[in-house]
Amino acid sequence: MNTPDLTITPPALAAVREIIQERQLTDHALRVYVQDSGCCSTRQYGLALDPNVHEQDAVLEIEGLRITVDPVSLDYLQGAVIDFVDGPQGRGFAIQAATYCGCGHDHDHAEEAGGGCGCGHDH
Image (cartoon, rainbow, N blue to C red; front, side, top):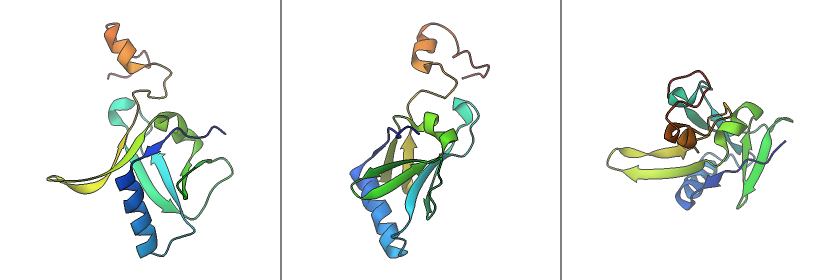
């Protein structure tokens, strides 16, 4: 299993640690996943504290925090950044994913070439 190429910002790391301490979930990992694995325009991401690490999960440890990703979500999350924002529109976690959608095409390159990515979905 590949190691996920994820980044978690210092504010997000601090927020996850605070939640883990408040809820006394020190044996849990942060699970990052794709909620809807449709193509790019409909994809949503999720976070959960999970006590289970499954055999097929990819696992990454950043500053003592275990992060797990299931094999279906792994390609969609390569290069993603997990952040915690606190602004006028509210506060919470935000995941900024790379442009790769898992269909095998680079969207930035495809758009410059004058077409969709070729996966059969409108972007």
